Amino acid sequence: MLQSILKERDLPALLSRPEMLEILQREEYGYLPEKPEAISWKVQNDCIPSFCAGKVTAQRVELTVTLRGKDFTFPFIAVIPRGDGPYPFFIHINFRPDVPDRYMPTEEITDNGFAVLSFCYNDVTTDNGDFTNGLAGLLYPDGQRGPTDPGKIALWAWAAQRVLDYAEQEPRLDMTRAMVCGHSRLGKTALFCGATDERFFLAHSNNSGCSGAAVTREKVGERVEQITRNFPYWFCENYKKYIGKEAEMPFDQHYIIASIAPRYTYVASALEDQWADAASEMLACVAASPAYEAHGLRGLVCEDRLPVAGDEYHGGSIGYHLRPGLHYFGREDWNRLMRFVKE
Image 1: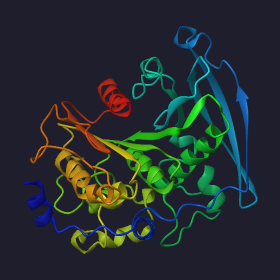
Image 2 (image 1 turned 180 degrees about the vertical axis):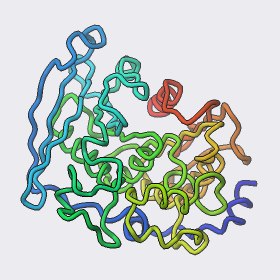
Image 3 (image 1 turned 90 degrees about the horizontal axis):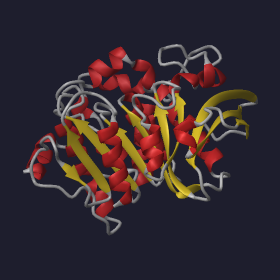
Image 4 (image 1 turned 45 degrees about the vertical axis):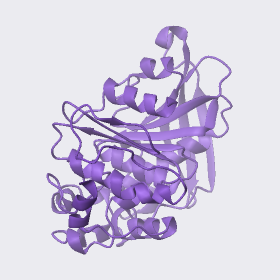
């Protein structure tokens, strides 16, 4: 059944990872900025006194990068269980700087043996069309971009990769189990981040939908026209040329999942989030699976039907679940994600 649906959608064939990343950057997200010339940080210990009953350490880190001869600083919070470690960890690209947060049950995460490093995306560059502030201001002093210059999603992803640079020198963190996660537009960001940085063991997309984990062709809810008219600054300028022309795109969103292979991908959908379209998210996982099979791995291992609420597929290198409820990143999503990692 699923293969016949994919055949009707006529998705582009998978290519090599470098070819798919080239197309995705040139036509959708823009090319990532180069690596910084220098990176440094200042650490404030015990930034949340007695946090999680003293079972963790909480540090506020001000990370400074030098890019094109200019400095830019943004903060993140690192919460690590007490002990020798090393601990598997999430880099959570979040909508707020709060720790804990309604999208991040920090104590539950650390009680499960994970560390979590989180930052607010607006502290990197604002979620609007202003390209003169934050990291964007270093790249675009006049606020103007060319056709393939990175949009905000690529800039937020680049910042998450710099947090990973910091993690490399922290002995309590297990770099073989580095994971990046995000919800909605930041789920799109997490996928792009993980696809373009092979240091990540896993990338998690929660309800990312259009231009994230959902195939675009025949998608219901949000399409390229709506997303590029409402949020053109998330993407490179080239992406606008596919408004109303999804069938002519030389790629689809299965490319971003396939580009993470042979590392792990986890996609979460919500039943009532019809704008994101759970069926199209699951179909992207199915369509990306041959990239894993080429490495001798299993991609998405699932029943041969579209998803129903309660489905949880953890048998392959692509994990997926569909829960009841709305567009949200809650405890159920985190618990299923952590279960997948532990399995």
